[in-house]
Length: 78
Image 1 (cartoon, rainbow, N blue to C red):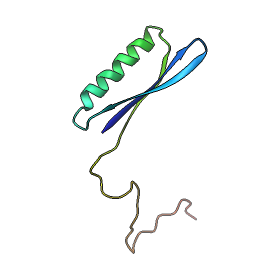
Image 2 (cartoon, rainbow, N blue to C red):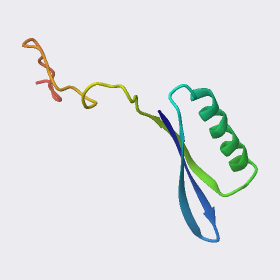
Image 3 (spheres, rainbow, N blue to C red):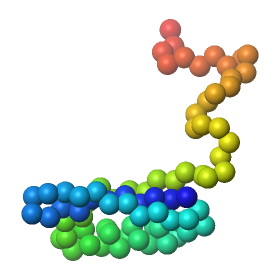
Image 4 (spheres, helix red, strand yellow):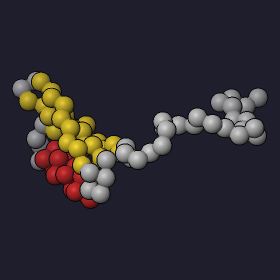
């Protein structure tokens, strides 16, 4: 699934918006973002245009939950 987020500015106020797209609809989501960007370029009060994705069939939480015995990553190497 994809979600497009954007902010509309009007009379000194901002309002956040979101529009969902199905997993198979990445191209329409990107086309919608381009429409928003065209409005922004034309001077309309539109900003913070972004898209995020989340796979509905993912297993478990994002990130590393299990590591092997040879995993030895450290943030700082000394």
